[in-house]
Length: 105
Image 1 (cartoon, rainbow, N blue to C red):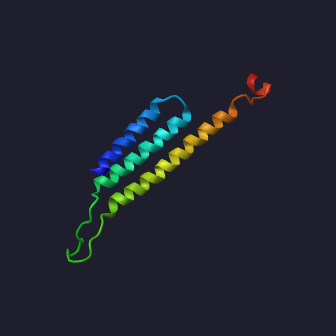
Image 2: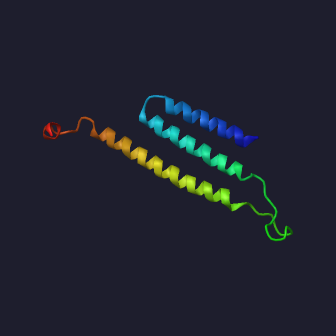
């Protein structure tokens, strides 16, 4: 019950930030949506332990595939976040700092 609630709150906050003006809010909205996707992937894989794959008598194990998907999603979300922050920084640095020779070209 807690995973759907967490996903709902993260998606609602992410969409709210995406619809607000300002680039930093846009970046934070994407970050929250990325976290929501990670929780969905973990919840889709099951939050409880499962039986061992070989004989069922061994210790309980967890399915590693959803964890691998979440790790990949974390790396992709981190890369997109860094790219968006670099674009934001470049845009803010570029304001008012152009030389007159560059404006004519």
